[in-house]
Length: 349
Picture 1 (cartoon, rainbow, N blue to C red):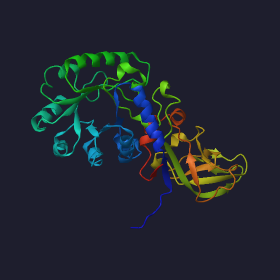
Picture 2: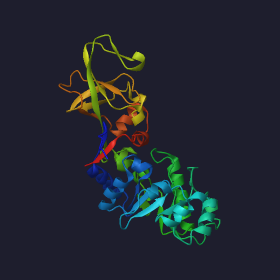
Picture 3: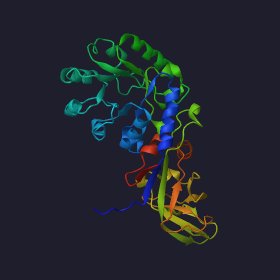
Picture 4: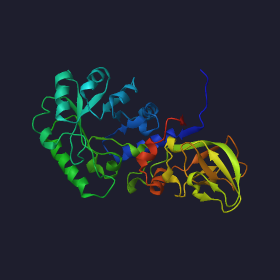
């Protein structure tokens, strides 16, 4: 098979990923620190993320679906995998054969697992205020869970990235559930929840965003390192005269004669039109080059007038610090990560 290089790549820093997990683990105190690797490791590649973090000591991983779980087989030695969306009727074959635990999130799933799970351990999600997945507290304490081998009882914080009174209400509700529902471990905190303090850690934390370079709360600023560095290859450098426009809609007009580099990337790759007009840009050999004009499906343009001898085939690095790009574009840090498309080749360093 002929190897064809991609004009797009993600430079992924394994040392930053591991450093972020270690910081989160330290903030988790005596609790174990796991890792959410759903959505293909937030777009970085779930298998590679698992391998790097498992080598660093992480033992608890979480995906969304059974197809995500199957893609990770075989698991590294000593690793535990949980499937957050539980087990539907069509999932039972996978749930019986794949060495992963369902996170049961409804009375129907509890019944299904009790009838067909052959007594295997499971996790259970209880809703303490998210109104998403999870049994209501009164359902969970009604006896429906009696006899289940519950490895981890989980809930999920809805507003941990804010200084919200809801955080305290959910904490109190989960503490009450802990007193009445027996499980080997209890888990409440996501990335932002880790930053809320030791009261939220319980036995296991489940960070996601912060592992990959996102800053969930101010407490993490300065501690979380950038992991993802998108890069695009220049297709051509062209001269644009003063008064000429660049891109669809003629939204950018050259104020002077300039040089424009057209790069092989666009909104089909997750670099959306909302980046235009925000001051977004890239760098080439440490020189800043601003984005100009609208973002096309797979083309973007940069003013490289002051960038020296940049030319066709050169690689430029997109400005992609997640908190900064989120504030400028209006996209969440999660969208910025998971939107990076399949045309990127992923290189771990």
